[in-house]
Length: 395
Image (cartoon, rainbow, N blue to C red; front, side):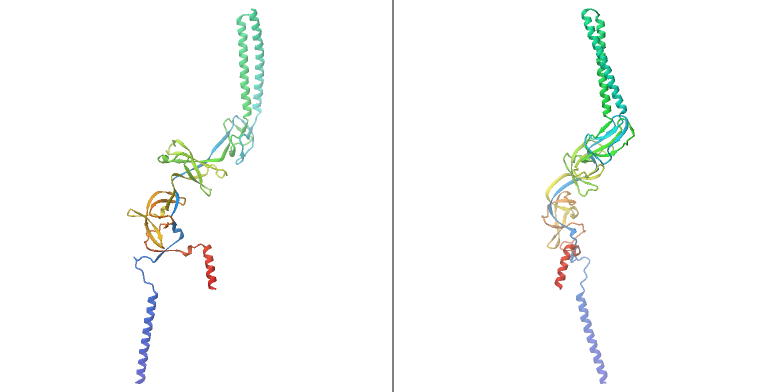
């Protein structure tokens, strides 16, 4: 009986100990488990990448008109055959630099040399006839004065003299033409530049006005851009233009040099010619360019990216970061355009210089949310020294 009572006492004690231990373990687990947030409860914090935010600064803001077109040289010329004949020598090829007056093409001169000699002979013969007619007129004048011949006979001699003078003048003209034709067998560069195209080879026969070579001067280039007729009122001579050319790492600055007074058939657009300096000769004829023409400009105004601006029920605002928390900032906006970093809009009221705002469109955010920045976005150059310092402290 005593043994049975001892057994039950021990059993009850063990059960009490197990119950106390279970209660303590449950309490510890409950304390370690965070409470589940309700669906409508604000998050404790929000993480941003450095690229999600930007600082409000004073910048130059420009309203831009996009234009496209191809580049061409302001000065370019075609070398054409001035006389018909056979090409003897072509002294240049594509890409070679030439100077004004440099010989480019020589043609066969045998035919034109023969014509020149013929014209010289004709002039000499005409001068001989003039000498005979001059003596005859002078003799007849003396005979007329003495009354040995009639006035009619003298008039005939004077007419022959006039005809001889005219023949001499005609022969001189023919000689000049022959000399010019002979000179035109040698073709020279009309401008200083580069040979862009060669369309003839030695031995070919060409006719008058056949195009033989093209020469371009790359020191001054222009982009021919079509402007819609509705926008031409915003284009004026001297306006600044930023031109991005395919293959060029940076944008180039140009200006509107000329505006065509007539519209183009079909498109009804108006051609504007944007002049671009090309001192290094990097630009080439035919390159495609995308231009941004400045129609309006403001200097030193506060700007924010267009992607940062939100509108709700007619109210315009941005999300700012103040004291490590999100704040909804109402703003009054002005001119929109480009501030050098992309699409931007002027802030007239609501933000100060140096304010930090959310640049990216991350949807609807909640004011008062604590802001943290992702540690993985820290540059390796700054993270490595920090890791080294932590390692040294551990040692």
